[in-house]
Amino acid sequence: MEKKPDFSNSAYIFPPINREGVKFGLIGLVIYLILASLIENFLPQVREIVGILFFVMWGVFLFFRDPERYPPNDERAILSPADGRICLIQECEFPDELGEIEEYKGKKFWRVSVFMSVFNVHVNRMPTAGTILKKQYVAAGKFFNASLDKASKENERCNYLVKADSGEVYAVTQIAGLVARRIVPQVNEGEHKANAEHFGLIRFGSRLDVYLPEGVKPVVRVGQIMVAGETILARR
Image 1 (cartoon, rainbow, N blue to C red):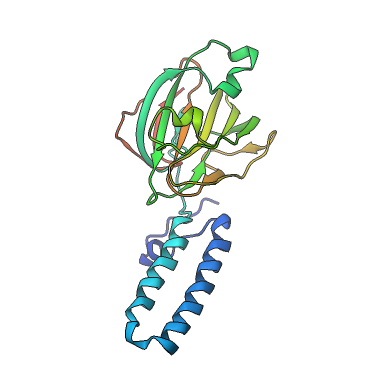
Image 2 (image 1 turned 60 degrees about the vertical axis):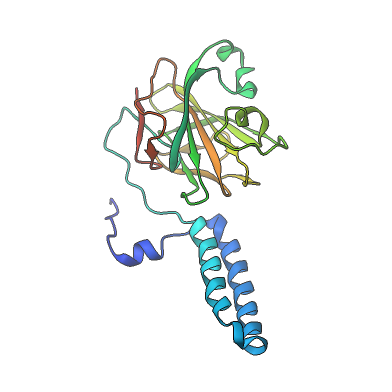
């Protein structure tokens, strides 16, 4: 049974939290309670800080928010895997690590890059239903701004080669950014994921690259705002 949208104010103020954020939220809550207690007992003249600390703690929770998404009823659609803004659209080969596969050497695909600021939802969703053929984590040590093209070769990243249920092959790359320090994959090789289903997240500002199936062109433009699991990047 399809879940009905929740239009209540509480759904915006208290959104669902991704499991990766629960531990950080709890740590933030404990620290907040300890500091609030110390301030109340020993520094009552600066009680305003308690309120500031509360908003900082709540911000930790909100960073890991995981709102419900509603994919369009379009079987040909390839969806954005991330919230954010498109920073790059170009035709290029698969990432070096996937480009080593003989079948894809020398072939070019349209790549759409979505930049996520620290204010965006950071849960990543499948562009279309498919099976993970290959997952490859690259522990590069640099942290260029994720909106730059060189971040795709120099920053920490995780590549996924996916075979869509419709038969086409495409790739997705999670790229850590200037602030981000960890990519969190939540899918394994051989695992099947539904359209718009979670496959991971990246902590803080970062970028998602989608290498569209061969012959498929994007229908979006640089600067356009994306909603993960809802905005259409291309149609097969």
